[in-house]
Length: 380
Image (cartoon, rainbow, N blue to C red; front, side, top):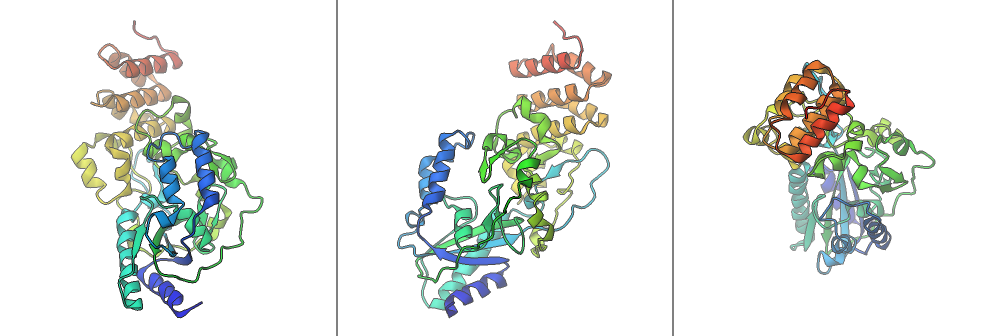
């Protein structure tokens, strides 16, 4: 490897990236074809922004940077160890990547520093564009071809050193750099992630049905979580780590060293009842500079209702009964489902009392169905 390529890797590691690789800016035809196939089969339904045009751009780096020659691919670990003990009362789960500060902001700042250092090394401003999981760029395809990691059957990139507990970033540049070789590692015959996904979202190796993925249901979905999926979501209120938790590669993954990814508040095991009380200002304050903001307050409270219904702690009944008066029908609907699932006299009484004054037809239907399934009389 030339001095420039090694200098780039050294600089990237000094800045805080755990794994660095280089590949060409050639297109990713295999990945483009696979993405288009998944769109045509409805596996990406619910992601309105995931269009054929976006897929085309994401897999053709030359469309993103004029004169693009190379891609510097980086990975940063967010594996900060086990969560801190939760507060008394029912607690939920948040995907590990969201325990600390928002990775988009942090990694973009680091990538800008990498580009500045790169320009200093070559002696002129390098034409470049950076991506961190929020633009039309196929991060995983670039990482695989750059030798950063290999594709797991859950579609995550697995690195030899830090497993799949990594966040990916890319720098597309007009520099002509010597590329690294892809890794020869694979997951072999292991299918733990497929077998242990509670919703069956991994419909085939490397293929995710977005509409069944807990991460989609708790983050991207803006409407009601389908009734048949709610009991499968468990106690996850933002994202899901199950397919990573069961992965044998991750058992030996090194811990990340980035302080900004350490757990904030009780994000590793959040107390759920207080989350139902948050208003918009309180939500923004609590989740400032956090990826959890993406779910929005209403979405998070919807998820909390589902988690409380699945946990089965009757201590949640008063909070859920109060949520039957929430301004948003989506929160009332999921609170009604949770109360029906918990059962007991107090829960069923709160449902019966709420039905006469409920004006939203979807919520009325949920209350009636929850009462019926609990064997309670439905008021006429």
